[in-house]
Length: 454
Image 1 (cartoon, one colour):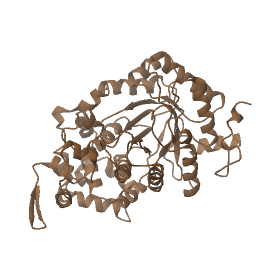
Image 2 (cartoon, helix red, strand yellow):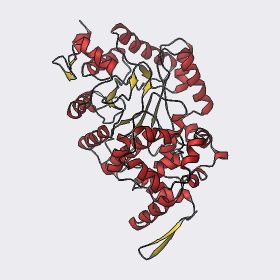
Image 3 (spheres, rainbow, N blue to C red):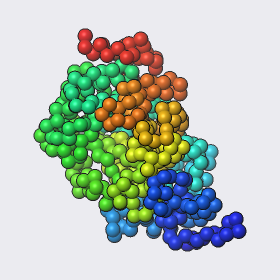
């Protein structure tokens, strides 16, 4: 294994694979904060050159967190298809990149090899790609999954209806829910971020949303994004649970900071399949975001792109219905400005797809970040062309509970219109029945929430 190269009249030596991965990464403020990023553009190029020559086998044998120390590493390694891995283990990262971008390589080809890839391999190839490469590579891959509806169908763009309310008012939640539905939002999931994470509040909020979609026969799924242990208790109490949510990280230590581990996730997954009300078989919903491992001191001096890829390796183990990166939520300490947010969104989407999961994106920013609404709209357009599975739908793009800026109901509708994309088929048929959509276009009923109160 060669970990040095000579460029620009200087020899660059790297101590291990982890350092090569970190210094080959595009500029991220989180890596700079951690003291692991390349110090110069020349060093970054040198690291990319070294990385391009490493084999996939060398990456598998050198995970950024050793298997004996970390259950996430063990899950990722244990899920690798050995027969496929044997076919590709001698490829260099450069050869993997060329295979992905080759014109004749199909989505089926990529779905096959993804089963033989570790997360470090997925992160490595992303670091050798331009933004357009990431779009092209991801656009080839279609991942479908079924909870009550089937997500990821070609020609569709789904959305999560996010009816958050600053006091968890049932009427306030239902008001946002009604309005969102009239814009064709909510086919991916109706997912509430609760203010109150208690068991009683979780049951109440689940029941309120479930009763509404049952009454109106809305083909979708509901979820309250409480801690997964609270959702499990709600499920055991008989609450109407479709999919189970949890934020996850790329190391065991950082997952402990979230209050979870493999045992907890396993229990939720098995109980959800047994007692949940979704038709399934895909019932898990995970959220991620570059930098979360650094914020909990669980990054092991690995870069945030590689740790993010490991989140997707963990998610893959549970055959999820939904996964999305909340790309600009954590703050400028990790992604400083719009350039870094856009790059991260494209990386995350590509890495999720290459890992084999149905990948969406919360295209968003916070008010203390050097980004604005135009920047996240630009990212949403780029991701839509890359085949992004779903976006968030928030009233006016301003979440009144989480206090961050995101894609609005109108933004998702506009993306569908501009790029000739449709809601999920079951959901579109329902929208047609309600007079909200006709032939793929919103009607004059769009935005008129009174159709659900007559």
